[in-house]
Image (cartoon, rainbow, N blue to C red):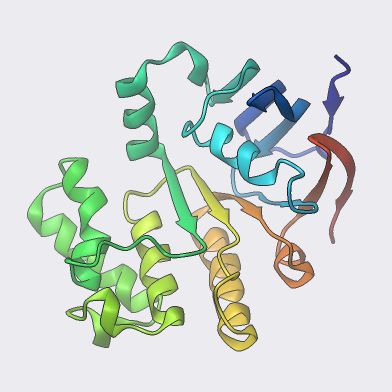
Length: 237
């Protein structure tokens, strides 16, 4: 199988996430066909392509949610394929944040409690949890909605809370799967600008799956997937 590889522009930032000749099939149907890429600290990378091109599958493999059939995914110096389920959970809990199109907030927890949850899972002390939650809700502009439940929030508010939750444990990599796909254009633009600002402020690498040209524009690089392979790439100014 031919390996498709994108070689990033030179950077002094360390590589935090690497895919090497990754393949994946479902029910015998190839979805990823030898994909290789690198993501550097603080970099924003857009994964674009038509539906069925393999974008979300690649994102799931990068995040350790799914395992490739062949090839390697490395987070810093850790080969994810060498970890068992508990090890993968630990890496995701400690070092990777995820933002979903449909928010995935827990409906029985308030906005503040949703943001606090990953900190509880990581054993962060109560006082520090409270301070981080306060600062994050303030930063994403929903302080006044801290005690509201997800069902009481607008779509834009829910996505802001989801971003705060994804950043609460200070991950090295933030994975976002169509984070504006369920929002109107105005709220979508606000969320994209917030993601751009937060990645600049925190130095967190962002890998963004999107169909949106506007979403790709906030990224430093764009990789276009076609039929499970890298069909094109470009750097952005």
